Length: 326
Image (cartoon, rainbow, N blue to C red; front, side, top):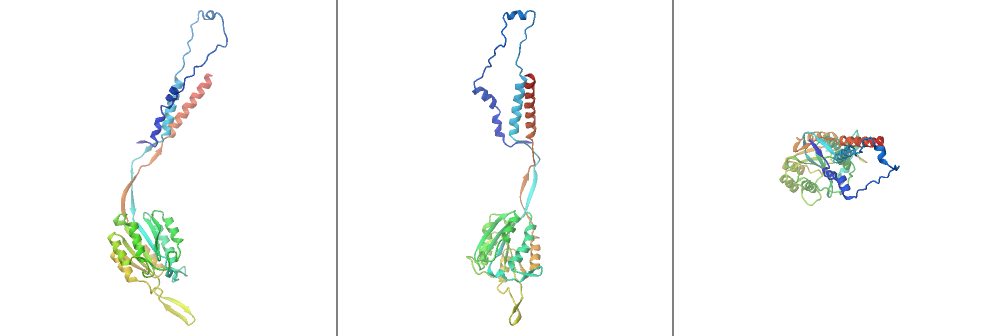
């Protein structure tokens, strides 16, 4: 079907008639270049030629004006509606930026890195693979902040994650506040598509709400939480007295993280190194997408150049005709 993008421009059609009606007509003054006495003598035996005004240029000009106005309304050809099913999840990432994330117990390309760097390195591929999902980012330490609202712009989410720094949200860990913020941001989304992935390396040491209470709110709002405990089980520390083994994840509260995940229908994962963290993200990639409301798209083809070309052609023809007659 044909669709006019700016149909209100059709009101310009009577504009020439309106101008002619409002402005006074100017009668051309005709003066004879040569006065001949006894004019009747020259017409003896000849049939008088009556000059009649030709109407076709005015008709063509009216058609050209009509076509020009039609072109201005921007006619388009609308194709058949094409169904576009948008599928995916509303997925929120909550990343711990507390001081303990400085622990360098992860290795990337055989080089020791801190835990936040490992998360950034692995999360990049995960975010890029989540085509069709709306992704948001929460950063938490002593307080929880919404760094990125839900968006399909995965590049922006990844950029803001890479720009985050340890201690940016405080040195403590407010796990409960991070969950509460996620519940607030996702509560208006479809109930079967809300997912929170929470990464932390410690226990809740700050915040206004306890993690388990926040998990109850999440379960009541149909928010599924996947918790990831980050940090190695043992690490060799060199000192003046020699090498000794330490547990850099001794402060990790795995029991609470397990309860959070189980109470919301999620799952707890343990990431002791970069390989395990990558594998966890691959498992999370297997979340079944949830189909949302269907959207329809109608392809459009512009048609304005056809009436515009015809109008310009008629104007050119009229102009050439007047030049020849003159």
